Image 1: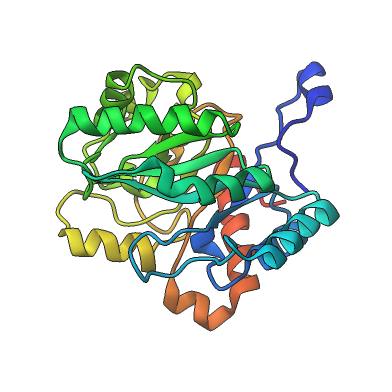
Image 2 (image 1 turned 135 degrees about the vertical axis):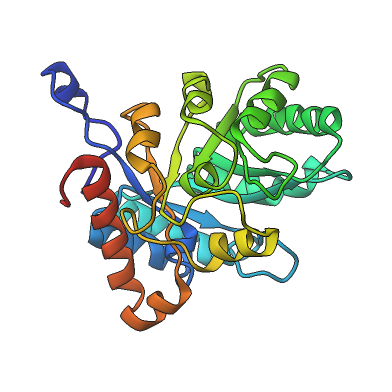
Length: 287
């Protein structure tokens, strides 16, 4: 098991073990309790759960308004020690209503989640910032952070835009910026942009690999993000540079989905390989 914090190790001057989380996309065939138990078996410290779809009718893990699934998930956490780190997904569009996400936040609070993944879809930047500020105010009451993820096909296309929106929102309590290696590699974001993000806004980051560059259509970028990411080391994203620019103790969400390869090797083996390759890339060896 890789623990999120080892205080005695830090006192001895030893590096604190990096915490890895099994992201939804890496385990999307599984129910929440199944994901937690698999994470425990493989050595992940946490899981990420998608309890609302990223688009109407899109896949998700069903737990909201299903008390029996919530009870089973909490029991799996208690039995294994694996916790829920982040929950998905909140999309802030022009007609955003934060109250529509109360069931998601209630479920996250019951699971002890620490972060909510937020996507920005409102091209009116000042309105997006205002909506984000209001959502941060709501989320912090639940003891969670609202982590704004930049994605090149959204209204928050790069790290500079994410930081600009957070600052325009007044950098409220609970604000955060989520760095996904894929979107770093396919946006205008530079390592200097990553280094400019204040530490207090960084709560976790996502790792995967792909062919980097900006000459992709929106459809191609979305397809890669949702269906065809590569294992760390298989593409040419500067993962070493990216994670050197991020805090060394930042929790890492292993978000590597490849539908064809997952179907061939099975969910368990895929999640195992994803963790091993992430550890090899970031720590120099697989545990």
